[in-house]
Amino acid sequence: MDYTDAPKGLVVTSYTKAPSSAITTGGVTYAYRELGPKGGIPVVFFVHLAATMDNWDPRIIDPIAKNRHVITFDQPGVGASTGQVPDSIEAMADDAYTFIKALGFDKIDVFAFSLGGMIAQDLALKHPTLVRKLVLTGTGPRGGKDIDKVVGTTYRDILRATLTRSDPKEFLFFNRNNTGKPAAKAFIKRLQERTDDRDKPISTRAFQTQLKAIQKFGRSAPSDLSSLKHPTLIANGDNDRMVPSALSEDLHRRIKGSELIIYPDSGHGGIFQYHAKFAPSAVDFLAR
Image 1 (cartoon, rainbow, N blue to C red):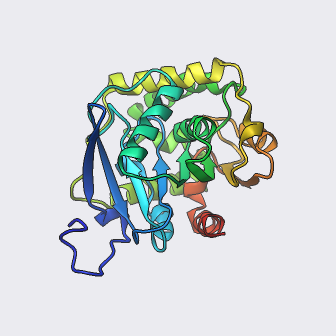
Image 2: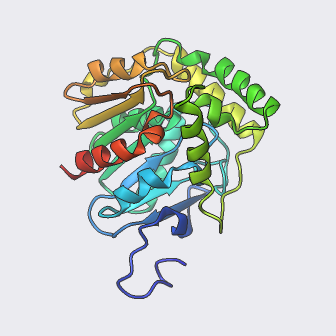
């Protein structure tokens, strides 16, 4: 079902039913999904490393889409989008800008996770008037300590997941303890709730290119984040092994007036483990 097929006045607010669309600009066809009531400033979601549109937790998206126009999309070279994955975060931010402008928006709110948060920072720095509010989760600043180690961590956990026939996100996003393991299983199960019109998984080459871009971002000179005047909500778990939790605190110090939430006994996927607490916080922050 898409917006045109829906009965008049019916708004899709469930991410599992969000219609997929495509728009072509600059020689690239961008795949995207939208839900929630149209009108006003949309919330554009920037997804994590190796992820497609199918990797968003419906328990995070649905509460936001209840009252806001939500858009998720695949970066070039990922999922159903054509083109090539760029080898730098700055170029990914340029692609995101191209996509957003092609949809005709002059102002957006950004919800970003992990790699998406790095892209979002570059987008807001380069196009400060485009972005109204930033939600930065499980991420860190350019040049942040140990961001470049994400490559080794990722490959180690992919191997562990392969040996146990698990999803790598169970290792990468969650603590391997009595609270983390069931939260991981529940999260993976929620990602399977959409059964129709699912996205194509990322290719190995595209994934490796994204990893190189993150490594480069981690080894670059820091950006001046003091110029970001946007209301910003930063969130993470207290034991993020992918993008160390200390970097969320670092972001909080660098972005004046930002708010910080650190969830206990959780990792990179802290916002997914604590979705029942985090989603209302995000809704409240975006509504203010």
